[in-house]
Length: 340
Image (cartoon, rainbow, N blue to C red; front, side, top):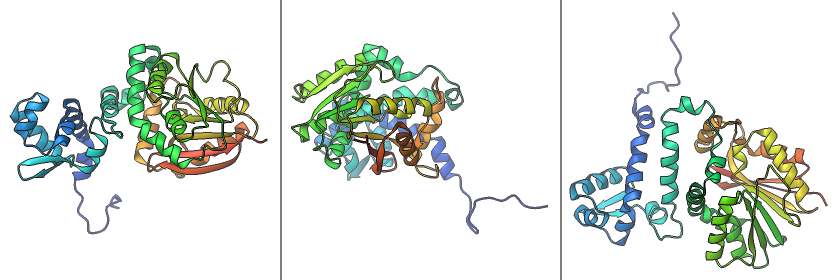
């Protein structure tokens, strides 16, 4: 009788470690969430400390602090030097409140809002109601989501402002612009640029506050609306969908791109930034997981490859497509032009 084939390299003993780490990854998320909610990394950032010192600062017992810090050290979030702990370099940069690159609240928000769905992926594959519109319809949920989005994406906004040349454009319409973080970053770098952040009414109320805090209310405006309903503001010579088309299937994406084509001035440009699969759709993991859970929406959603995005743009009428990596192993950037 033929023996069943496996992917095991010849001579290599199979082990359970990889599978075990996948199955128990929720424990890592729980540890990270507890440390963030307690402000552990922010307090450790003040100076290397022992568990007893940290315990008093974050309001738990020394015994509990020691256990949490041991777990964080095992995960590589903290580093132990003698009896004291300090933050790992990436934790120091991204998970300390007050840092301009902090996005810990966004991670807590993601864990709080997605954990229950992920622990029963079968139920996720049976479609409930589309979540973004539910959140945007509730002022408190919209505020929490928008602020978390700003914290997680303002550094990406500055990255785009550094890497994309906005100098040829005078008015940018950012469709589904959320917190306005991309517009804020671009307007800060390009003093001539005016922008319009277009999103749901409860979202742009918060966007206006963040724009005002940046001192850019004279050049960064908001416009409430739904990009599937009604008309877009006119006069923009640059238009974009950043991080939002992954919530829709092909027909809706084409509809949105054709509306963008009609709204942007002849010779104007479009920017698409989104989660993107690689060409053969075998990764990367973050886009793959998002593609899987996209089945949870009322209208099935998908993560596309860059080649597919280019094809959608071509079908909408755009030309001169250009593809660039935006965030490694996660997001791509596709730009195109409307013919003059």
